[in-house]
Length: 92
Image 1 (tube, helix red, strand yellow):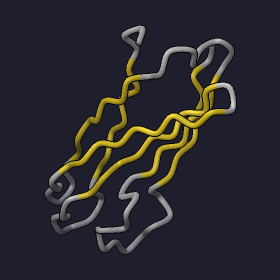
Image 2 (image 1 turned 45 degrees about the horizontal axis):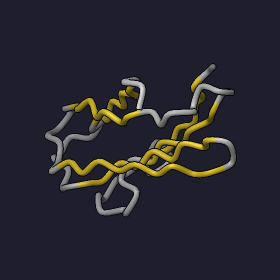
Image 3 (image 1 turned 60 degrees about the vertical axis):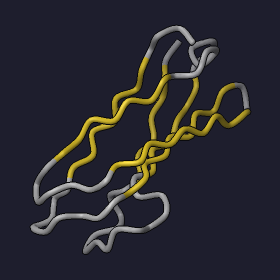
Image 4 (image 1 turned 90 degrees about the horizontal axis):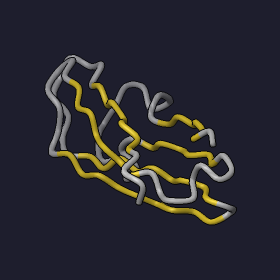
């Protein structure tokens, strides 16, 4: 590892507390998937948390993409499920 970290901010946009959830980040390093997960016990209404994921070595040579999936196991009942995924790149 080279000490670089991806910070993922998860926010509860609803008016009720959530239960526990797992956030997953899939890094694509040279065509190989590097999967990392972080468990969180829940969020209060309108609360947020910053989760840290170490960026795999080799991710910047060349660029590598990643996908973030919040509540990967669909444990939290939500009124909107379409805002749980995001994609990005680590630019080398």
